[in-house]
Image (cartoon, rainbow, N blue to C red):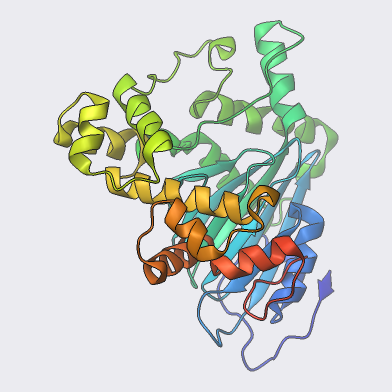
Length: 349
């Protein structure tokens, strides 16, 4: 166990599973970030409220190639991360709430669903002060082994889970129950999970449950009925936004491009993208603005020009939406890309 300095007068009293497996605790958020980078990859992390008190703890159980991390930060935080290559991270909240943003979409996270981070996909994560979570690390090789054994095929496509789904499709009840059972047994003094026979069984059972309970690109090889395809009108409106995002387009124009009514478009986007037409448009504009701020092709463009080119007519509103979406100002993104220092940018590993 490693322990950074913790003020005994403010020490965390929030119960955390697997208390006997304490790895690290600290009231220094940068120390917590540096510690977790060794397990979960490089990331930036900062409190979303000025002066927030951090009470970080990390308990961990390794089961063969799979690791279960119990984490608590003690403050409202925002994390920017890019999962390691060939590694999946599964976020499961035991307490509190949060949201994950990837590409254009934001998915709420609570105690009744989970979120799977596909490898190498940039993501932003917001967690509430009271949150306690399990972050489970599973290598792609574990998923691939299950699919190959089940399908009899030696070569299968790289595994990719579908993440922008209705809440009912991301509950993974069996997986969540098994994780809870394992950790409750650890708290009851059962340390048999590191026995070779049990480790081997769990290394297969945990990824098997996720592959059966969540939609992914190898559903057919697992003998599952494939997830209902995204309707054509959703694809049409997304293509329309991608082509016209720099213009001042309306809901009526988006519905016309999708060839459905405004209400049907709103209902469809709520189901298949957990979004609304105007939020989808705004998030795509923000995504493109961030892309340009981090592009060598646009280094000569100032932030005002980039905002205007991406369809924002009011610079102040653009800056506010950008900070809310990505956790930093547009200038911070540009300065970090150019290698310049910025007092307001999040700390990097």
